[in-house]
Image 1 (tube, helix red, strand yellow):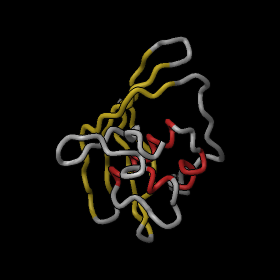
Image 2 (cartoon, rainbow, N blue to C red):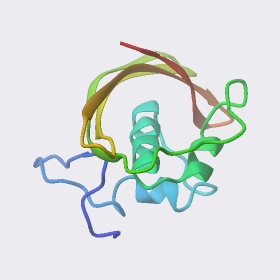
Image 3 (cartoon, rainbow, N blue to C red):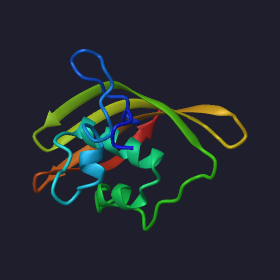
Length: 134
């Protein structure tokens, strides 16, 4: 799995897909030691956590002020891809990332989640706060 393309779709300078190990795997598999370095990387790793149904990572990277008590996953959902539309560093501790995530439910119906997510950095780590769906 570590050698497969990362679900988040990030590519290198030559537009080659990064592997899971090169990309989000280092954050998901070693969260305590390797935090995402910026809001976009955190958002991408959270998308990957949804693909891999890693509720532990999603909860750990959700800001405590908005963190739910648990995360559940819809049975049969297939995540189809992620597009980052915009990223903006508001100041040293706040950032926004706008993205589109595509999915297909168990019945085969496709949908898109469009969100402008807000992030905050505390103690050197970025956390997802919340987002506006568009």
